[in-house]
Length: 107
Image (tube, rainbow, N blue to C red; front, side):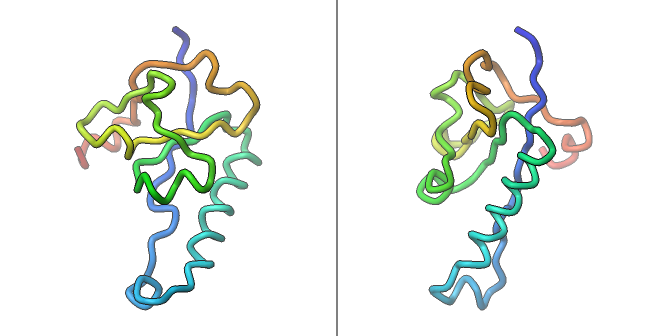
């Protein structure tokens, strides 16, 4: 199986304490939309995120396991999600995600 470069998103919408306490999450939604737009503009075919399974699907993310894509670390199945940014981008992709060695310090 050939390797595919995938955009790994992280903390798209980190919120301040005041934002967490308010009901207005529009800045968080705008942050995620801007991140996805930037990934599309850079021609990334797929984006993945480790996030809340009730939140990220509203943007088009779905569990990566539906495409036989896994993480190299333990996490809830529903928390590791992918989203194609190009038509058919997930059709020939499966396997275990590999991160840049720079992330090894956080494992």
